[in-house]
Length: 402
Image 1: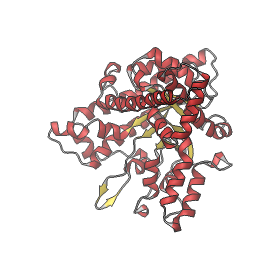
Image 2: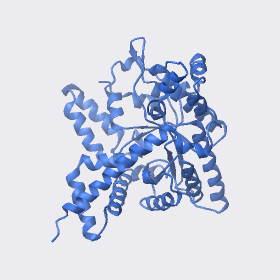
Image 3: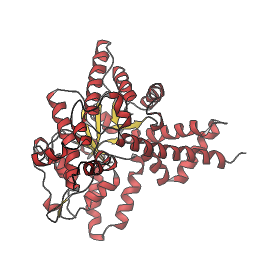
Image 4: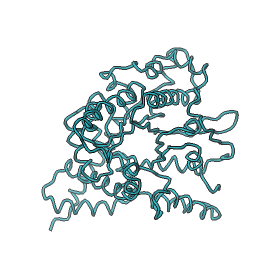
């Protein structure tokens, strides 16, 4: 095992890049122990040093992880990681709130997961003078099309801790919410975002919100904005290959990865050239493709040199740590500025699903809500939320009444 993993090497080649932990921080220690338990004896000390550099050392300025992304699905995983403990926590909530219903209890549990995670990153938030150390807490995905409900939940999440960043979906209603929250000096992370029009709509919404905040002398010392591009969810979940087949175009895994990267790179250039205050965030990453018998990680390699956030779930970090052939992966400074091959882009532009995603005006705000990737992702997140609600309901049913 190499002393430094590929994420560390990527950051070394990319001034301004931030690696974020894409899960609740409360599972970090258990995750480390599980990986160590199955690691070869000779690698364990190296792995321990990597874990120590990721998070938890007495010097937060040296942590690899500069922030956190969470959502109800990831919070459910945190509960499942230590269900007996969370059941006791929930029983305590029921004692203090007799007669509470399962929906209200779910929201209380969710906010507790957000609080515990954000507490863990408060040292970095303080040390960095509020520039880093944010944890994204998401509004209920089932409310993605309800502006007033999202605003109410956003205010509650933002009140949990000063380093809580509110995660708001890229729906038509969501961009109204982001503009309002920005005008109030509340940090935001735009999620459920797949196509260039959404990314730029967010950038413009944030810009307008900031102008209002400044004109009203709103305190912006704890504000920042990130815009998430859910890369593989656009390419895989949204059905890019199937849309290609409709036009008689067969797309390889590499073509799909390059399609996702083309959108990301164009958004990156536009945000930089337009001096937008938001930072692009890359998520839903995949290992691949295989090129000439060599496994690549284009989702990382093609971002070398980028001043962006890259958020990684534990499963992806595990893959990167144990990636075979690491010596064949190199991070070229400035790779983010290199376009994808013209012949690939020309073929992709023959597919309306991609052509519209790649054009700044490819979708109107009214059309975001019907995008296949958004619909499917919202459904998945809503299902996980329902499971958290059912956990709350089970705790109510199992509560030991005196």
